[in-house]
Length: 339
Image (cartoon, rainbow, N blue to C red; front, side):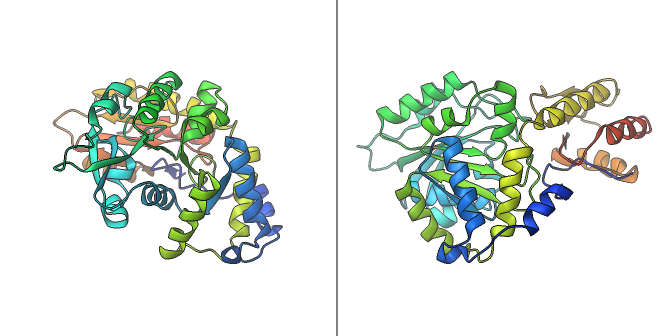
């Protein structure tokens, strides 16, 4: 039995999702007449209380479109040093938006209002970049799937309002946070000017992310999406998977979280595991001692048909997902005993 815990992006569409995909009514999204794409965008916008949404190929694209619309060349984006938009999007902030970054050192990647306020460039300083955007990530990938306290987001929102700055959310795994906190998506729609949500991570879709914002914002983002080569044609087959996921795959994220905590309990009992990040959602990050390299450990796991990824020189990440079942969990325990 292969146990693939590299990411929650490795899932396959369920039979019910496949049926929904093949039953989709489709058109040409570049012309704006794909019924399934339009339905998905309207559904997501309504869920978060935003005016409009844009269906894109990836979370990198939705994040980069947001940054491109919000900023101007020569400006800066405030984000944590562990942010996906900085570490894992190919230098897109510089390449696409011609902007710089203000990298902050948060709590496992979570910023606070004081940090944000202190990082904003003074407008009368000609030597500095002009701060144009604040970006948060929730849940925080490099922080082990930790999530924000809503009160802190509200405090950051107040700072942004005081300085007339837009606030963007990289919410690739936002639904993982929402099922833990019980908070309504519309609360996030009120606090953020733009939101990126991923459908191909915990929600189990084969492809796709959504960018949410005002109609004017999304209109600009749609133009830049075309420039980036992101115009879809009969994308409704993929959009139908997103509609199905939003209807059927959100609440079940709790199962992924429970299995992640079970993996944590297994790892705590192993002598080579020096430490574990707190397990808040579906991400497990283990720390090995200086004598064991993560790359070597991951190779040993691969020999036992367990797939994980290195997350630093001595860090290994496991991510639970739709296709990781209780049977996989039992088999994982057996195989880990051999490491």
